[in-house]
Image (cartoon, rainbow, N blue to C red; front, side, top):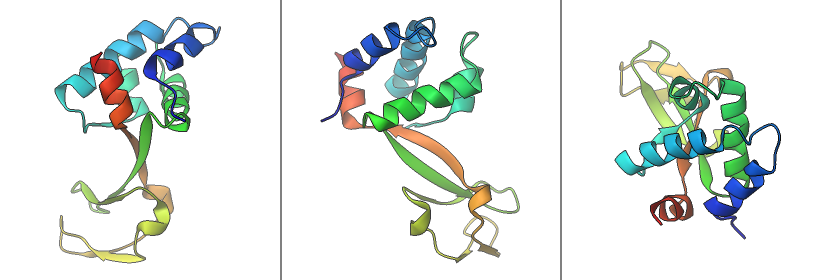
Length: 131
């Protein structure tokens, strides 16, 4: 069963480590998803928009939301030549060994160390933030 955003917030409020971040985190997530419910979110985005939340804490919070099925993991395979994202998938095993990059036209070999991890909101999270 999926935890609601309200239950998640209540859990954070009881946590010494995270209680000071709750309002800031909710505001940032809510603002991002209000602009675009399909936005990809990562710890860099959260930390850059907050004076309270560093990247490690942001990643911890995002992983907690993912465990509660309020966020889904999305993996991005960037072009090796720096031309943006070549492919995206929900699991690393979904990537082929080689791709013809639609960004630069070259063939790239899969390198798991280059994969960027971001999160996207579940319908439950989007709906609970609108309430």
